[in-house]
Image (cartoon, rainbow, N blue to C red; front, side, top):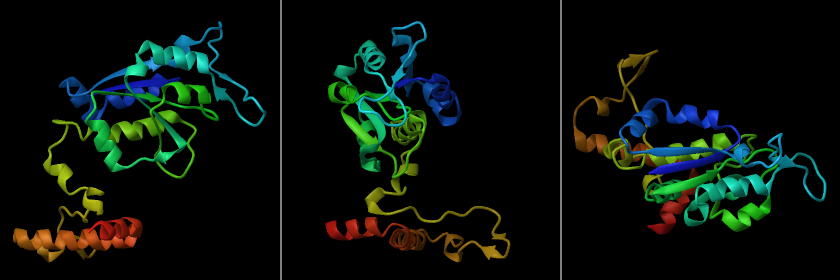
Amino acid sequence: MKFTVLTLFPEIVEAFFTSSIMAKAVERGLISYDLVNIRDFAYDKHRTCDDAPYGGGAGMVLKAEPLAGALDSVGALEKRVVFPTPSGVPYTQKRAQEYASLDEIVLICGRYEGIDQRIIDLYVDDEVTIGDYVLSSGEISSLVLIDSVYRLCDGVITQESLVEESFQNSLLEYPHYTRPEVFRDLTVPEVLMNGHHAKIEEWRMEKRIEKTRKNRPDLWDLKKSIE
């Protein structure tokens, strides 16, 4: 799986690919990445990549020319191009699984008020939002997307770890406990201590349902509607 990231600040993204589990996945050849500095495709001596919006208004907009140059340099028209933006469709685990099945995705990191709409019209396949809030850094939202995808790629983490995660079967994950057995007068549920696997699985499913109904009634309603 390859992530190609177009950004004004490649150093922000570079740190993610050289740390923790991602660094190990890159070292093992499971994940590769290419960081493209949009400023390298600016035409003027100041490497200007933004300008005031037509029609007026606050803020600046990323210019079409340098973005187009960066996209053309990676053959973006032949690849899946994703633009994280507050005005996109909600990003979900289902879409993460879809992206994990691809050979490569190209991510555009927005800044300021956004990017010239003509880049979206010409290049972008998916506009997605990671939540109903606004960030100043498209790098952060792109990294959220990357993190959700790469961990699903074969060999990065064990398949067992993925089976009962949140959003599998429209349910949230059950609570977890580890040593010590007693912490500030709170004890680990007895069912987890007795080694009876069938009862443990039953308890975990009950807790998944309980947590989903409490924290995400929308997910619970969706699950009930498709059963």
